[in-house]
Length: 222
Image 1: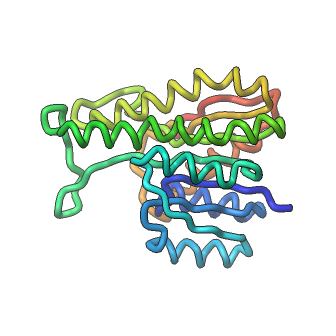
Image 2: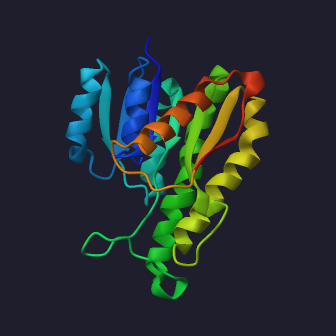
Image 3: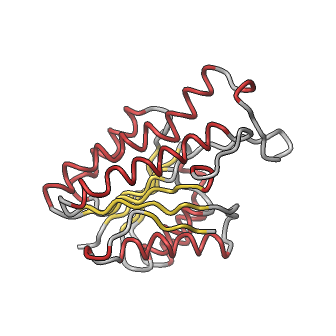
């Protein structure tokens, strides 16, 4: 029976490369995003690898949707990858730098929900099944902003610090139940179908492939 990888926050770049890496090893892949129909190209690529692929719609700003999604697959979920995060862009496609005074109450709440709270909700929903089986892997896309924050990208900085903190805090308690939680702390821009996206995907695979006696909770990607 194929193992199952779920990616929440599927899209081009890190998620696509990670999906391809795990699919090439025979994993069934569940791709979850706000608009899964945008990823038909990725679906075709994964099917070319003879992978079973499931597209799911989920809004990471809605914790109840995230919990419901993970709960549907919890009995057979081997690897959970939380990749959702918020960057804002201007109308011309340029990255939008936003300080605290530029944010609204709604944007602060929504960004924090996507960047941190829904990651915790997804992990919480996956744990009962993994604990019962005594095995499982939780992978989180971290960022260098969690180590060296920027006031111009404040909500993402706080979010990536949260990802790093939850990974480190949960590492030993989950290890005691045979569950490996780890993050790749990405400190570079990652474009779709690039050497960087393939490198981050390889880092995630290497974390997954570690034996329990060599488990680590973080891999930096510079």
